[in-house]
Amino acid sequence: MFDKVTMKLNVDPLLMSALREDITSEDVSANSIMRHSQTGEADLICKEDGIICGLQIFERVFELLDPDTVTEFYVKDGERVEKGQLMAKIRGDIRVLLCGERTALNYLQRMSGIATYTSQVASYLEGSRTKLLDTRKTTPNNRIFEKYAVKTGGGKNHRLNLSDGVMLKDNHIGAAGGVGKAVEMAREYAPFVRKIEVETETLDMVREAVEAGADIIMLDNMTYDQMKEAIGIIDGRAEVEVSGNVTKENIAALADLGVDYISSGALTHSAPILDLSLKNLHVV
Image 1: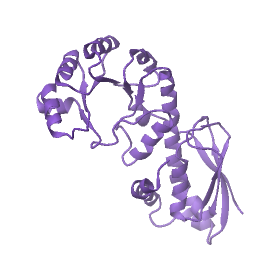
Image 2: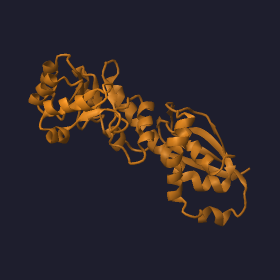
Image 3: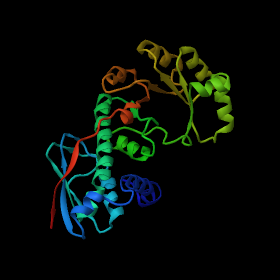
C-alpha cells in the first residue's frame, strides 16, 4: 500500500494527469443523461481468475474527482480472486462514477494483470534461493504502479530509476573502453553505498568483471552451459543475476542454476490485463 506522502507527491499527480487525458472539458455522455447530482452505486466485478492489485489506486481516482465518494472493498491487494466475484461496491455522484470508471479500471486491470503474471512466474522459483526481479522496461509514467504490482505478485524490485544504483551495460562498457575501466570509473565516482553491477555477454567479460571487483555480475542472454561455466568462474566472488528473454515458459529451466537473481522484463512489458468490470450502476 502507498503511504500518504507517496500518494500526495508521486501518485496523485499521475492519476490527475490520466484523468485530464480522459476529460478535457467535460464528460458529455454522463452529463447528457444526468443533469444534476444524484447518488448512485455500482459493483466491481471480477471477470477472470487472478491476483487483485491496485485497489487503493482504483479508490483514489474517484476520490480525486469527489472526496465524498465511498468504496467498500471485500478483497485486499494480493488476494486471489475468481471469475464472477464481487470485489467492491462504490457509492457517489453518478456523474463521478461514470467519468472516473475507465481511468480507475485501466489502473486496476493493468496492475492486477502484472501481479497475476508475476505470481505465475514466481511459482517456478518456489523452494529455491533465487529472487525474481523486474526491470525498467515499464510503461512511461506508470513505473511506480507496475513495480508495486510486481511486489504484490511475489517478485522483487530491481532499480526504480537510474539514480538507484550502478548498472554498467554494454553501451556503458563500450563508452568506457572495457569492463575493467568501466568498473574503475564507477567505483571512483559513485557513492560508496552503491553496489556496482556489470552486464556480461561472454565468459571473457565475466572474468574481467570478477577481476575488476564487480559486486553483481549479470549473465545476459547466455546459453545454459555458458551460465553454468560463468557461475564456476565467479565462484562466489560476486552475486549473480541471470537475464535475457525470461518468461514463464522458460524460467523453470533456469531455476536449478542456484543464482541469486533472475530478472524478467516480461513481468511488466508482456503481462496481459486482468479482466474486471464496473457493473450494475443504479440510483440509490
